[in-house]
Length: 245
Image (cartoon, rainbow, N blue to C red; front, side, top):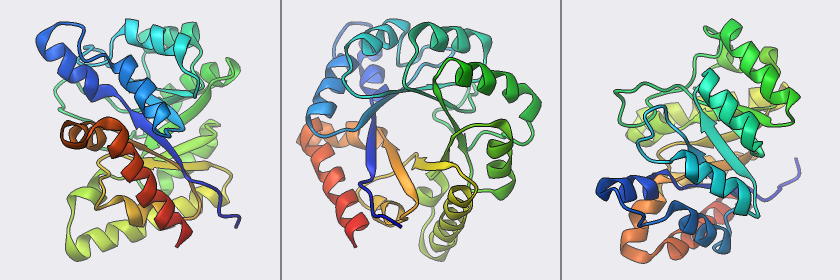
């Protein structure tokens, strides 16, 4: 397999979280997106939640207008979010599970159990020329559902891998590797993300079938200490080193 460069999508949600804590305009997630692109991000990810706890409608509108790299719009499978996606036409839409009471996304979308409901959303986005991704766990049944639904991309949830330690983490890594290989073999473009840090990114980045990682919270946290551009540069370095090895 050709060892293509692994793309880095930078999620700017939690720049907006900090902004919204004061209810003012600073720090601006759109400005953070520009810095991320300057630092080498291949795309920008933003999740517009039902409760608008971080990214706002205005953020999505501005990002759609000014970005020079692809926008990956994370969204729940709702009529409201579909209307917003069809209005702004981002490069990609990643369908994710969403619960109002959760602090962050707790797991992958149940694409198999929600197959009939998701079929409409995947079809509408595909017809609009928006690349559809399903954020799912490393599970063969979910990957089969993604193929059946006609989604061209599957993003594997890496949160459990990042939270585990020792042998349990190794087992989860092997599960992710097997799922990525299976999805790739069945025609899906494979991405991964959630919870990745400097410590955990290497083993994931080394999986050759992966084309993109989406990372946000850790980079925004590191930016407090080292600056956003420096944090992205370091993540990019670790990804490239792992992929080269």
